[in-house]
Length: 85
View 1 (tube, rainbow, N blue to C red):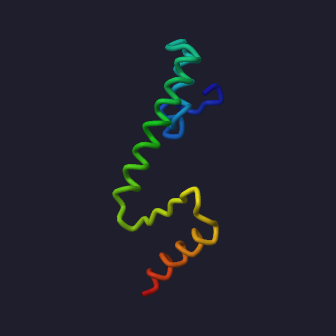
View 2: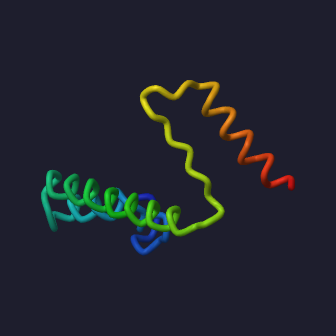
View 3: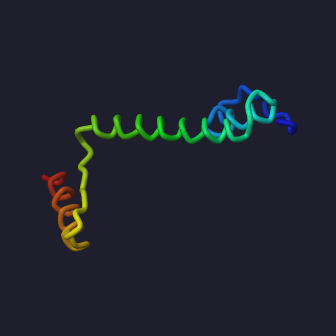
């Protein structure tokens, strides 16, 4: 901010910046800012997962404890081949 970047700049609205700017202004403590960053990050991750789960073009490959790397690769290849058909 001291270098002239406006506080309303879209990049500064990213998670982490706005919270710590509030702390630097004395609007909250550093610990409160860090807590808010953690909460905002969790909410963002949840929104991402919700979007990904709704997208029918995404194929999830999950690994069970007994799944081998070769089985995962074979499953990925099967999915990729299905796009070619």
